[in-house]
Length: 299
Image 1 (cartoon, rainbow, N blue to C red):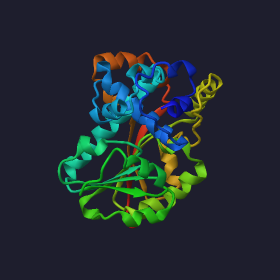
Image 2 (cartoon, rainbow, N blue to C red):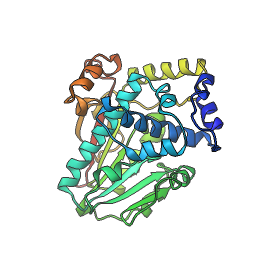
Image 3 (cartoon, rainbow, N blue to C red):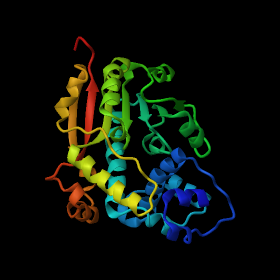
Image 4 (tube, helix red, strand yellow):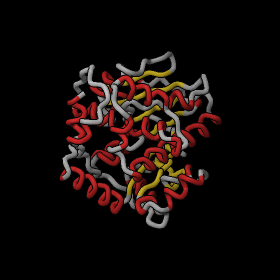
């Protein structure tokens, strides 16, 4: 357990660990995966955030970490971002699955994500893609099923697509939650050059920051490091204008782009939190979701 807390880098937080009978040793990759999962567990545990993820809460209990400890690691912006990202993805996926009940869904950079259990209609096929070490870690907590499989590989290695069995006529939907920001412009350009051809007619949903949004987040990361945090994943790729994505590939068609927080504004308490938060202020447009479709070459 001490390794996990040391990785977070706050001496005072170590004192909040409730039960240290178990010993856990995590790699840097595993710590980053847990950071994301802990965020979901925290907002699930807090009734103010209209979101439940009992699976994430159970992992926290299994690791014997107090929610009081976790709450110290996530400011209001991070919590709102966690709920907004989850709600947006689940909403768009449910809409797509309602129209394509036998579709194939691919989660790019899955970590310990549990979206399959939230949107499963009993017919879809699901793939969770992540690096080999991440998939090995995932399997310690989440088992595969007949319709939910894992793929161990890099997003940028085209060979992972060979593991995906799908019928394009039934629909295929890919999504990336808080993933693409951390890659370079060159990596994203190369990805978009071949991905549409592998899943023609398919759709892709991801969240993207503007240059200013990335700068603000990176400034906060650097300040946190100065205070002792070892979380040092700065953002690199940003999207200023959604139509700029077409420069990567003519097969990219923009379905829609919508504010990052728009799917949670119907909840009065969260609406107040969102509108009073400078990072999510609609007028600044620092972060939003982008929904694309991959056309066939002759469309």
